[in-house]
Amino acid sequence: MTEEEFEEIRDKDHVVLKHIEKGLDDVQKITAETTLENHHVSYCFEKLEDLGLITVEKPDKMVERVIDGQKRVFQHPKEAKLTGKAHRYLEQSEPESMTEYEDLSHREVVERVKTVEDELEELKGSFRLFKKQIQKKI
Image (cartoon, rainbow, N blue to C red):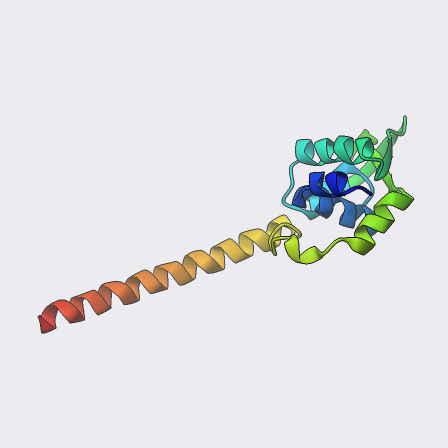
């Protein structure tokens, strides 16, 4: 893999490759497990296929899955398989360039945001109290 090709791979593309490596091989499965939207994953598939990192096919059949607790039947989404080039890239790539949030599920991101919001409100309250204490001393 050339240095130019290596630099073209964004964090989102890396996340998609890692999920394909784990067996989540279609757009819907990756979308369900990450914070990425369907069109982002589809774009990653196109880009990664152009770079020769995955092969993509769209099975001509219906698939039945449980999504958000409901059974759904829909046209099978695009499926991807890693190429040898992708396996070499993943072996060479350094995951520390990834942000810690991109590989979280939607639920995990929501939980973290809620925790951060709660902590922020607590800090705001502490700061207001501290500010009042300082103003009384002045």
